[in-house]
Amino acid sequence: MDVRRIFDERDFEKYLGIQRPLSKKRVKELSEYVKTVDACFPTSIILSVSSLCAEYNEQTSEMTLQNYLDADNEEEKIIFGQIAKVIDGQHRIEGLKNYNGPHFDINVSIFVDIDVAEQAYIFSTVNLAQTKVNKSLVYDLFDYAKARSPQKLCHKIAVALDGDKNSPFYQRIRRLGVATKNRYNETITQATFVEALLKYISKTKMQEMHDRDLYLRGKKPKKIDADESRQLIFRNMMIEEKDFELTDIIWNYFEAVKTRWPHAWDSTGTGYILNRTNGFRALMRFLRNAYCQLANPGCWDVPKVEDFLEIFKKIEIEDGEFTSENFKPGSSGESELYKALKKGSLPK
Image 1 (cartoon, rainbow, N blue to C red):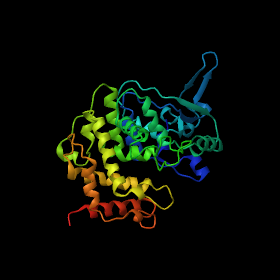
Image 2: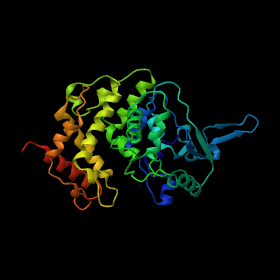
Image 3: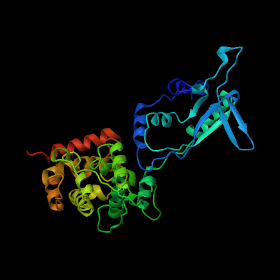
Image 4: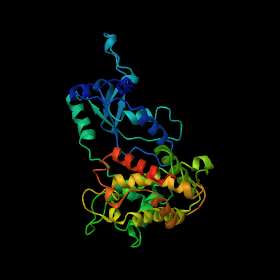
C-alpha cells in the first residue's frame, strides 16, 4: 500500500480543490479504539489499484495483487508496498499501524484502473454528502446496551428526569434531538444533557471509551482519589453504582434553580436562556462549584434542594436578567453566565 498517499495531498484532492490532511488526534483516538473488545470498522477502506498489479480469477472469485516489473523500463515497476492508493480510510489505516492485538478483520473495496475523476466522485459520495449523525439518537441507543458505561448511565439519568412528572426536567429533553410530538416545553437535547454530565465522570472521550471497554470485559474502572474527585465529582459514584444518588443530586440542584428563578426556568418564550443550551451548560459548569461547597466529592453525599438554594440566594441575578441580550448566544454567553454565577456565590 502506498502509505505516502496518507501524508501527501492525493490526486483526487487536487482535482476537487480540497485537502484533508491526516489528523493526529483522530489517529490517536482510532489507535485506542481498535484495542477495545468490540472494535470494528463496518464500512470499507477504499483503495485504487492499477490493472498491471491486479489479476482476477472468475472461477474462484479471488483477486490477486502482485508486483509489476518491467524488464525494459525500471521506472515503470510497481513494488508491493506501492500497489494501492487510499481513496478513503487513511485514518483507519494509520490507527491500525501499530496494532498488535488479536486478528482484526477489515472490509476493503478495491477499484481497478479508475481515473482521478472517478476517485474524486467516490470520495465525494462517501464523505462530502454523508448525513451527520444525530448525537442524541446515538446516546438513546445506549438504552439497549447490556453492559454498563458512562454514556449509558448519563442516558438513564436523562430519561429518568425527563419522564418523572415531579422532575424539573419533566418533558423538557428532546431525547432524539428533534421535537417530540405533542410536547411543547423541550428546551435542550439529550446530547446536551448527557455530554455536560459526562464531563464529571470521564475526563476525556478516550477515557469514556476505556471505561466502556472495561465494563464490556466484565471489569470496572478503579476509584480515583480525593484530589481527582474535585474535578470528576461523580466518577466514583459511577464506579460504585450509586446511580440513584447521582440522579438525586442533579434533581435537587435543578429543583433549586427552578425555585430560585421560576420564571426564567419555566419560560418557553424567545430571549430567555436559563433553561436552554447556554443556560443549562453554564449551570452544569457551576454544579461542580456548588457541589464541592456542600459535599465531599468522591463520596455519596447528596445535598438537599435547600442546600443548593442557599447558594443560589447569594447570587444577585434576577429572573428577568437571564436573556440573550445579557448573555449572548454561543460559548461566550455560556462563559459569562458561569462567571456571573461563580462570582455571585462567593462569600461577601
